[in-house]
Length: 361
Image (tube, rainbow, N blue to C red; front, side, top):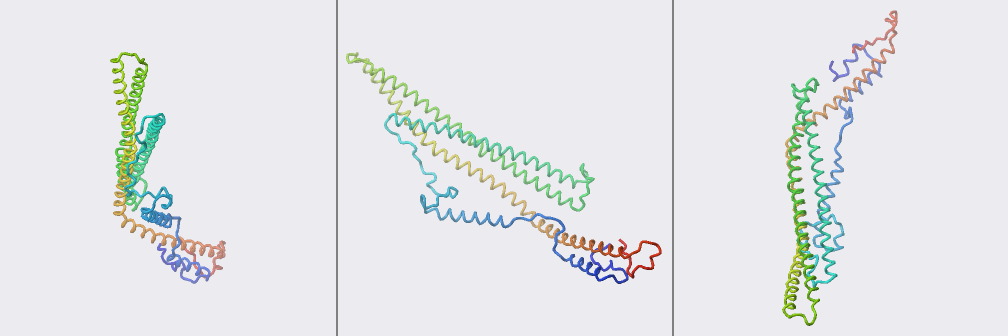
């Protein structure tokens, strides 16, 4: 029967004041705000804290533009990406007169290239694991969406499950998940083509170029040292033509060695800038891929948001009614229990019942 009014449970005769109080409380519960079951609540406080942090971070970046060194606070996270000094040329090694100390500096800088190759290769490997994990996540999302759609599909294998009027809502969730997964696929594909592959190619190309110049430098040095040793082996009375020939050979090898050394030093310095360009471009590509993904998702959810608000409002109203109905049933049960306590179950005791009427459930 209709559970919206408790007076129907009173019967034709009066009941005790305790029963009236119980039913009055149940009637008040219909208009109460108590929930019938636990519900998820969005932690808006945490979201606002995160937003405030981002705002403060942006302000700090603006303030630190005119500060230098320790005056900027020393926070590595506050990087001003619009600062032109970020891409100023860095001379890692000046071209100096050939000496053991300078050769050691060149060797150390060359060894750093191998360390860079190892670090960036590891970064590419982890990025690809991230992409693979994202693809697996998308596949699971599509399976979940397929089950949601199948619940709504009258011809689906799970059509025996009665979801009633909520079938379209489940289907809408499934379609939304499928659409978002398609955007995620585009994000992961973009991450592979604009981050992983170019960075991997950069590492291979640059390391190959540096190794080639290092080999040329080593070969020219060996050639020059050999020619110089042959020249120094000549005696004072050596043939003038032989001396001239070996002097020419030593001079030519010295020139080739100096040019090879210059090219290597220049390449090592240039690599430092190309590394900056490459990493900055990869960062921009990765962030723009994320931007596109979340922008598309935002459009989808913004389109659904009015319907979501309508459904949330209907859910809130239904929860209140449900909680009130449940309290009415509890009050009704208590009233029944009190009446049963006053009834003598023996046949001869029918005349001893009070004036109340038995509630027909």
